[in-house]
Image (cartoon, rainbow, N blue to C red; front, side, top):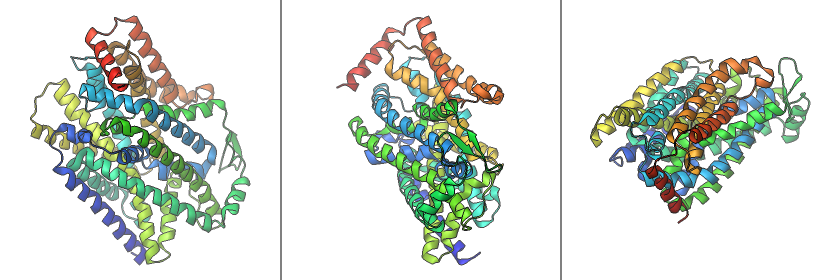
Length: 512
């Protein structure tokens, strides 16, 4: 191992130890399940904003998105980024305050819990179904994060992928299981700062290595469709492929996913005061726009570095390691540069860990709180409930590790499917629950089931037909689930009197 590699490894090691220390610190602050899953609703505006976006962006911000831009140009990546930026802002604007107020009124500490209490689902069928959907989609989502960690260490130090992935998973599980929501949110806040530093340093170094900004742009312009917003570049043929209106709308649909992301919605629910959400919204939106823009441009810069001979060509899934490779180049410049390279790689870990920890908490709450206690009616003491919650985190992590055992899996593809799953199943029911007094539990249940089924059917049956059917599965599934929710609610009996009264009380509190 070279000196620079040793310094990089030590830097990453210090960072990982620091994350575990945060988990240890917050262990004593978890007195009950409400603290473990929602932090006792104590988050400040800065932590709320940055932890929400860090948990949202995941490893695809520093791996999937730059890799996509590197291979195909800016079109696909840019429309994805635009959709996400719009979705981020609208979600903070119309959902954040409402779900904070409504869940507080109901005493709900998880998203399935909110659905169940909102519609007075006394048999907890809605609760159970929502929890099951969280488990189905969050386990592969978490697996993609573990896979990103494995790719990072494997490509950097030449170590075994599986061993690197397992060690990374152990660290994430350690601080999440110990510190719960407060530990996850605090580490996410810190990790968002590290992610920002990593993006900026790679941006500056990449432009310099590629021969300057003009050289980067000239190189991109020389490739057909590379800088187009209506075409993508094919590295094999060197030609452009049309990216039409349907594809653009389909890609913009990524923004719809925000309405149904449990790990983002939980941040809204956890802020200490609803009035502080305005500041959080401004911070979050600004960070998202800047970070997405830089991540996409890094892909363009990366290919400029390849053309300039500073970077080897990265084909297929290896394109997702572009920032890893650039960090290695930085680290080879000397001891201080090696520390910087280590921080950049820690930024990739941060992006991965900030999402994985939130997903683990949401999935474990579904098992321990929504299924075991609410649905099956198992009565647990506060101490027992905490033990079950931590065991659920460990159990779900083990399954995710098994799913992540294939090093050739694409981080972007896995995240894309899981994102669609949550957006289409939870997004419509969240909007109906918050904005429509007439919605009922029959409509909510129908929307959940139709959204989940459509995601799989469209992804594996309809979309492969191509042509007009080649649409990101989130869009048709979201529209169909929302329509079913509305139609079934109107076709069945109106909600009970106490459900309506609960909605009216929530609206009074909202406007107070």
